[in-house]
Length: 326
Ligand code: MG
Ligand code: MG
Ligand code: MG
Image (cartoon, rainbow, N blue to C red; front, side, top):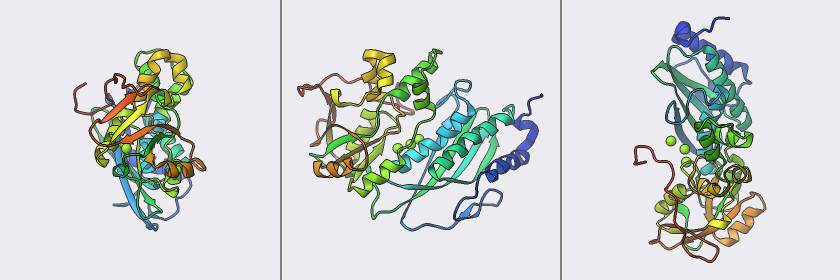
């Protein structure tokens, strides 16, 4: 069977195709107008509103051929959901914009939407619109709106000296998966899954907020880099005990002694990093599983990693940074 490309289908044909895929998914509560009008229209919910946007760019965030379109669709919304999780938000509506080379097979777009609709269903998101245009490389941009059922969101600026530092889940598996993919080596299933189908910590974020946590960030750039962002916003430092960092067990199996560096700096874990006084951490424990990894300190020493006896250890280079030196 001949492959039909996006260029052959044309802009309006492609929009019709996408509209068909999205409307085949069940209708979303509160939507007055979805895809097909000049804007989407929905009824607002109560609470604070949050909005975020993030793009996946071919050649920067993914390499075509190394990821299935379903995986990219999942990930495009997952990275936005992770930011909403970091605020303690409840996700709501999304817009998805696609830049596509004309030779892209329509079947690739269908696969992308399969992944998008899969994660949208999983986390209660309505895809209500977007845009398509032609470009020399693929860019998938999602924008996501949500609400916060509390007087204040989790914020990067909420950390205080003396707080404990904690993370949800395990770290480093995504970076390990990416390294194997790039090296063209066979990728151990759980590491591939961690990199291409990350699970945003939406429920955990809401749980942290309910239990009185004030400060959180999602780990996208890497534990140390994102802890640095949080410390900078709060005007504090941090001390992390290397032995306490929850290195992903699958990662340790494949990478041995390199696993700790990947867990500290690898990035794209999409777990939550948060700080709170010990008494709040005790309350969190009842609802959100986490690992204590260290303590917030007075400003001045930045983020340091220490061994079990408290001696500073040399840091691997910091996490992912666009436009910066590599
Ligand atoms: Mg971004
Ligand atoms: Mg973030
Ligand atoms: Mg982000």
